[in-house]
Amino acid sequence: MRDVFAREVYNNLPRLLSLIDTDDTSESYGLGDRYYWAWGLTDFGNATFQGMAHGLSLLWIGNKWPYETDPQLFLDRIDALFIGTKKLTRLDGSLEEAFPNEGSYCVTALVAFDLLRTYSLLREEINDELAQSWLATIRPLIKYLKNADEHHALISNHLATASAALFCWHELISDVQAFAKAEILLARVLQNQSDEGWFVEYGGADPGYESLCLHYLTDIYRSNPDERLRRAIENSMSFLSYCMHPDGSFSGNYGNRYTRFIYPSSFYKFRGEISYAEKFLAPISESISNNAVVSLSCIDEPNFIPLFNSYCMALTSYDKFSEIIPENAEKLPCNSELNFTKIFPSAGLLFDKGDRHYTVVALKRGGAFYHFVDGYLKNKCLGLIIKKNTKEIYCNHHSSSINFDKQNNTITIESDFRKQKKRLPKPWQFFILRLACMTMFRIRLVREIIKSFLVWLLISQRESGVGSNTRIIKLGENLSVKDNLSIPKKFIQIQPKQAVVPIHMASKGYWQIQDEN
Image 1 (tube, rainbow, N blue to C red):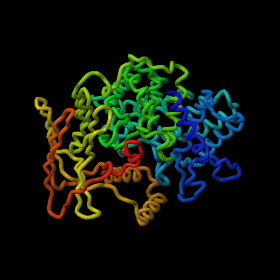
Image 2 (image 1 turned 30 degrees about the vertical axis):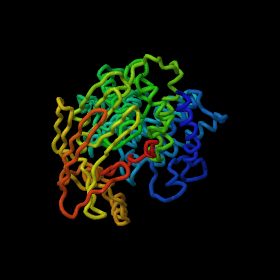
Image 3 (image 1 turned 180 degrees about the vertical axis):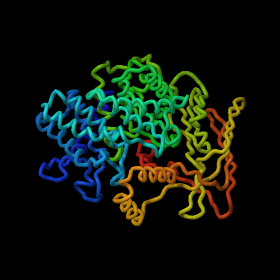
Image 4 (image 1 turned 120 degrees about the vertical axis):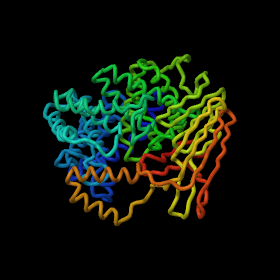
């Protein structure tokens, strides 16, 4: 299994190292966003790339570094990333990934966390002067995390990232304010955790980002063991266990953010402690090896660094455990000997397992489904589409009524069609955005109000529906689906060739091998 992560990490390491500007005579020395410092096609630097220092340091300290690199050269490269971070830090201590003066709470937290863990890993390798310089780079980021907050949506993985960063800082500096804010953010994540086990992502459950949330919650638990947090992590893994499919895929169009990736680190960190974590180990490795999930090699650069760090963490965790998983190890629900029908009402998900089949139904998505037989995807329907013209396309991912007839093993779902929120940016919109970046966005309150508006416009807005569909699904190995479609005149139904994603979401659409079938 180690070979899977080693292959992914080492194959992508040259690409990662190529991102850094190592020219110490350059104004952009230490920056990791090539689109900014090399191509010059944007007017700000995405700070997320600076967090690669964490993964690089894990490889170095864990004796997994594949090159014969001079130690001083390696430390100079890490120091360059700290220097680059300082250049990107705004006066209020914030960083950005989307636009100038964004004040991104998430990215500020992500970089602070990764640099703090880098500091801890390499502290014995550097002198006191350099150590103080690194802490001085991180300090403004922590100040921002203490003073600001994220209110445009409840995004659990963002809050977990900030909490982890603040706990790390307190661990090093004994900052009681940082500790208090970390506790507040963690409490918000845990208090909003569903009774079904999942953490909230824009109002719903998203397995992909849930695994990222666990990445940070696991770090918090390792530094601050707490039984409530452990139970929360265990409940989350229990929920996620249903989202691994017989063909090796994970999640899909039924997640609230439509993601199909999985961050492996938490499952390997909790190996031997949480039974659900143990169940994931062999399937994750096999899925990555077979390209059955979105792997590090498939991810684009804006999401590359957090997944790289998670893979490095999984790779360097192996030395603590035997690589052999016992043959009698517990299996994930999709591969278990038990037959069941499991419903998560709040998440809007139904999982049906038989002797030969495994079916996932998105109850809140008009009955979109995946149906696996003998370990392979036999049938799927990821949304019905109607259109009025080329610009007005509507999807039925909005259920109005759900009824499960347990006796007859059927589901009846009423849904309507709502206009897709996908749109491409126009030059005039960028012009207005940049004017706002140079003026209004310097005021935090105004900036946060506009962020909330954009989330509502692109993700959470609920427009009135047109037409309707009644879907009746008969569960079982020979799954049957019957639709009764009613649409207005001038509308026609179209058959999408691939998965339907009706909202704006940057992390959608990454390739995996099932897309070739």
